[in-house]
Every structure is written in structure tokens, then in C-alpha cells.
Image: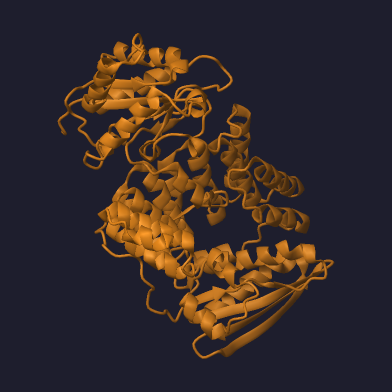
Length: 583
């Protein structure tokens, strides 16, 4: 166990929150803990100042009380206390539990005005009903028990030892309290991911075989590099919308995304992600040049024309290394047969690339999500909304998805995405009411009841567990299942890495985030998430190498070069790169 100067808990708060802070301090004392809580001396002075500085330096655990009051207070002595606590963590070994933020109202982590070090740990919420006036007795008691366990001699200094010890959030659900769980700001980029959680939620990486993604792996000291060209690699460029109704572009994009989803089910294929290929929409580059940039052997390009209840999908497969056409296909079908077209394309591509479609993959690819074209339209429109945590866009997505399930109550994928959307309202503290959560649970139950083995439904289960309940174990279990079905899908490993980062599982998180970046070597989004994690874990050599590669992928953008200069400064103290950037 790491030695500490004291076993005391220091409670830091703004004067407007003194009643709540006193309640927390009294509860901690009631559990047999020593608490340093200044309740009578909010007056300043050198002696008082030195006393508090000494206590922050010597305490075993620092508990900052976060609230709407601390949000509006741009200045205050509590901010100095927070800064001193954050600075002390820089002298500590990785994994030593020290900062344990508690939130006493609906203040969201995503925009909290706190030191960056506060964002690397799991927060605890002590109010079950945000509209109420009092802290919840059960939540306060659970928090005190967790603190007591963390400070017990047999627990040790690492919060990894406390993985099974749980406290609860502001809605009474279990969440782990741990040091070094990933910053919330990084999550916003996964959206999840997150959205990926939100449909995409989120997700992760490393080139280990995925059968055991939760095992620690040997760490590499280099940034992901482009992999050797695989003969079974393909990029599906965005399909051109040839319909007379130009507002039907959502349909062409939906068909494109579904083709990518089907190909991801074929274990032998390496498929470039939708995010990466989207930058080649209407590109003027030659297909050979595109193939070289994306690191693929084959490219599929095509178009979609929709008219009344008919649809034509064209596709041509090109060998990007020789610029030769392998085949060209036209599919003219009723609109209700669009799923059969997508399945046929996947089969044709697999045959051309000599990739085996497993029986399980064939079953998933041949599945028809809905027979109702209007429901499918509404679903695709919702999927085209990259809502993040914005109330307006989330509400619009919810409306489309509700329309989809109203038109077809057997549309499992739409039910799953509706559940995820409800979960995102909860996650971003836009609507954390029991009613919102219940609607999400009901939607998810419908999806699971209809098609429990569908990868899209599994993804929704994992994302909802993460967004609505902070149930990281359940979320990881779902994405591990998907990884066995889609072993070359970078979003799956990105999700695993982001969730493990929340848990503070550094080695496993970096392994999965690295794998996501390596599976999509021409894309910047997964690499950016990986580099941000390297920065959060202070892995400076790898972060700098990864940032250099990110600059190469983003055409030497100024913001990325500035970040590189910052990394070098933080790692070495050298200002030359910053000075060079500002010239």
C-alpha cells in the first residue's frame, strides 16, 4: 500500500454549498473517517491559508463538491484548493486514488469548470431527483462506504483494486468510483460514439486477437503505422444519388452504410470505415490514387436511383492496384427489395475477393430489418442525424425513430436506436427523469425480444448500458460479442477502448484504441481518439509520434500542429516548436 501522511478526507466547497458540504462531512465522520472540513474559518489570512495548504498536501483523499454554484463562481478560494489538489496528483504514482468529485445537483461533467485532473476520474452524484432540495441518504451512505473501502489498509492505493466496489450516481444506479477513468471531453469525440454510441457510438483498438480483449497486452512504443496491403481489403465510396428527388440523398447514404455494415460481417475482409471514405465523396482523384491513400486493393463505386416504388443500384468493383474493372452490376428491384440488393453486393464482393462468408454472417446479411419502406425511410433519416449531445438534434432523431417503430412495431434496429437516443438524453443530462429512462428500457426490451442475436441490437444494448446506466461491464460484454462477429470493424474496438478508459484500465484501453486506428489506417478519427488517450495517460513519446501521423492525415492542419507543439512542450519543456508555430 502506498503510504500517506494522513488518513483524512479533505472536503472542498464553495461557500454557497456549505450546507451540503457539511452534510457530506458529517456522513463521512459517521462512518468512522477523519474529515478536514473548514466550517468556521472562511475568513482568509496567512495562518488559515497555510493550514489549508498543509491539509491538502497531507490528506488521503480530496473531495471537491461540484455544483451550479461552483460553475458560476469564476473566482473563489475553493478554486485554489482544487488547483493545489490537481497539482499534487502530478507527484503521485499512476493509479493512486486521491481526487473523488461529488456532484450535488444536475451539473454535467461535459461542461464543468474544473481542473482537467478532475475529468479523469469517475464522479459521484448525490441527488437522486434533481428537482429536489435534499441530498439522497442512500447515495450519501453508499459514497461514504466506498470512501471507507478506498482508505482501508487492505485495499491499497490503486483504484483497480476497487473494481467491485460500487457507489451510485444521481439516479441511484451503480457506477465505479475510480482514479484515471477517462476525461469526459474525450467522450464527446466518440460520439457515442458515441454516439456510437448513438448509433455509432463509440469505438476501439489494438492488434491483439479479439477473443480476449480484456487481457493485458504488451505495450508498443510506437504510433499505429499503415499495415501491409491486404488482397482482401476494400473501400466502398459514397454512392451517388441519381434520384430526381434530390432530398432523397439520405436513402443513398443509408444504402451505402448498410453495405458497409454487411461487409463488416465477413471476417476475412478489411473494410475502410464510413467516416474515412466519406471524404472521397465526389472526389476528382483517380481510383488508383484513392486506393493508395486508403491502403486497399479494391474499390467499389456506384449510384442509387429511386423512383416511386422502384430502386436501381449500380456498382462496379475496381482493382485499385491496376485500375481494372473486375465486374459491374445493375440491380433493378422493387423498393422493398433493397435489402436483397445489399446482400447480393456483399456476396459478389466476397466472391471476387475470395473471402468466405460464414453461416452466421450469411444469416445476418440476409436478414430484412423491415418490410415497411416508410419506416425504413424514417430510420435512415434518423441515422443521418449526428446529434451529439444537442437537445434539438436528439429530439429530431427521436421523432424519426418513433415514426419508424409506429409504422413497423417489428423493426428491431429502430427500437434499438430509439433506446440509444433516450440514453443519450440521460447521459448528457438533458432529461434524466425516470420517465425518460423507462421509455429507453422499454424500447430496448422490444429490440432484444425481436432479434436478440442481431449485431445492431447488441450494439444498442451496449451503448444504452453505457449512456443510461454507466454499466461499463455490460457494455464491454456486448461489444466483445460484436467483435467476434465483426473482427475487422474499428468502431467496435474504439468503443471497447473508450469504455475501458472510463474504467481506468489503461493497458487494455490503449490496446483496443490502437487496434481501431490500425484497422482504419487512412482515417483520422480513430487515431485522434487514440492520441488523446495517450496524452491523458501521459504517454508522451507515443502521443507525439501519433500526432505527427495525424498531421500527415489531415494535410498538415494548423490546429494539429499546435497540439503537437504543446505535446512536445509538456514532454520536454522545449518551447522551440511553439515558437516555430507562432512565426
